[in-house]
Length: 317
Image 1: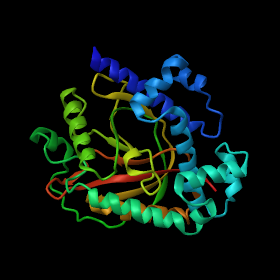
Image 2: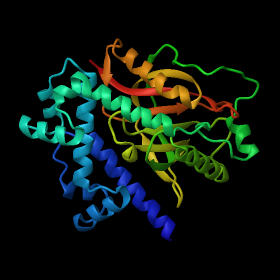
Image 3: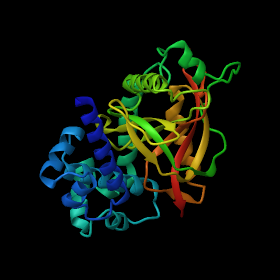
């Protein structure tokens, strides 16, 4: 009963997290968020803190500022005041104080140089902690590897993705396991191993299975210990149990980049994604980046070579 109860709380809090991201510029009153979670306000903020290790208010303010920081850095044609207003700050002075408190620099300094300096620091830390294993690891049973590995194919790692394209991704149901911490950690490798072993035992894995990694945060902005990642297996109908949550990937328009490589190639590939985005006629939309794994995504288990589509949610400029 205890495991199933925890799974139910995970599902409810995930519903709140999705709601927050979709209504970032709104007031987001505690009572409304509690209603989304089907909990009383008195209990909701305590449950949220227990699950997320942050208060609701701290989480909302941090995510607003991280969204704003990303836009200030990437969308240089947009004024800082416009960005502040978009994320619920009507007062420029209040936004300035909150931004400096969060990032140790003014928004103007961030746009000029501080964002690049923070990016170099955080991504350097990420690379030093990166697992040497593949995205899903090497300790799964042979039958599972047979389902996930594309046999008879030899493709070298690629430092940059192929030509990008705009693609409408479908709405899909998935089962997921969740992680909070440094991207690139071997904890994500272990998360994928647990999920795939569990999904296979539940009869969800075959040669046609697709998987999705959801990157909720930008590791060049969010502190490493607060980054969130979901490992997902796409399913034909909603389902959940004591070990995995049920969630929906809403789909939509994405800038999609085919990728083939090893874990060490991932960060340079994402850099290439965003360089191409600048000339695409699109801008990032609210929503997480995705790593969409096709059937049989593993090309070389020994070297950790895999293939996926790197997907950035977009809207027209």
